[in-house]
Every structure is written in C-alpha cells, then in structure tokens.
Length: 234
Image (cartoon, rainbow, N blue to C red; front, side, top):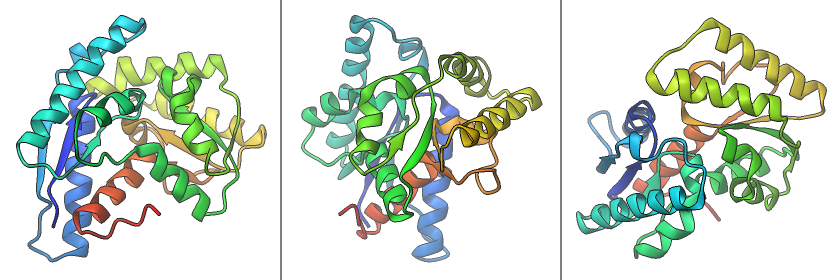
C-alpha cells in the first residue's frame, strides 16, 4: 500500500471524517486487520478562517504549501487536501511538491460523468459556490451547473462556519438544506454536489429528492483506491 498524506485544511471535524472513512474503506477492501498508511497534519483553522482578500489567501497558501512539504519530507507518496474550499490553492500547493495531489473536484466530476449526470447544483462555502476554481473542473466533465443563488450562499456560509465547523448540528439546518435541495430540483438540477465536508451532518446523502454526490465520500474513495494502488482517475 502507498502512504498518503492528509492536509487537514479546515475544521478538525473534517480531518476526523477523512481518517475514519479512508480507514474503513481500506479495511473493507484489503483485509479485516488492515489500516491505511497515512500521515496527517491537522492545521489550526484559526489561520484559515474567513479568507477574503488576496493577502489572506497568500498567507493560507504559505500555510498549506509548508504543510505539503513537511508531509512529503516525512515520507508521504501522495497528498489530499481535506477541504473543498482550500482547493482554491491547489495549483500553489501542487507546484511546491514532487508528489501527486488528488484533486477533489476532479474525482467528483468523474463520478458524475460515470453516472450520466449532466446538470447539477453546487452547494458549499461561498468561494466554492461562486468562484471558478471548483466549478470549471466539473464543467470540464460535461456538467452544466446552475448559477449560485446568493441568498443560499449566505445561508450555507452561516450553517457551515457558525454551526457545523464547531460541531453544532440543528434541526433548523437540516430543514434549511432540505428546502434548498427541493428548490434546486424545481429549478432543473438533476443532482446535488455536496461540496463541503461537514454538510453531510445535515443532509441525508443516501435518501433525498435528488441524487447527492458527496465530495468527501468520493474523495475518500479515490484516496483508498490510490493507497491500494487501484487509482482509476483516467
């Protein structure tokens, strides 16, 4: 098995989810006593919170690239960034190391293409929903994305940052997510991309009005494939 490095770019909740999911997938597919060889650097989210201006993102890029270099130096043979929004910095981080980084949106796009999905709504943090770095990866796989609704952007930012990232799960958030997904179905979306690790805490990924492509689950499957040397990105 290959050794994977995880850059825990957002909340510790997200990092714990990645560790749990990848280990369970590797154990299920390799052997009952197997565990995934991983190196994890859980970053202090206080350094990566509420990034708005270019200088904020430049500071975050330095934090992530330093982490990537440390993980490579410690023996990681490949990396993942455990946060959708931090993939805005993917090119900076990838340029700083000599090992592959599995891009979350690339694997989401592949999964949707294989499922025959051509129209979807993207739900996540503000920068994931409104900027091009994530959307263009999905569009490149033939996915037509509904334009972001700025009211929903505000709602989701509040739920993600004020509640889920501090471990708070409410029925109100669950109802809000159900309403948003139902409205997206009415607007013509054929599927939902859940592009925030913590959103599966308030969304039923396996039973909803639309098919849900959970970026975290898909990313973890890709990581397990890579660890087991069964990477099928192509």
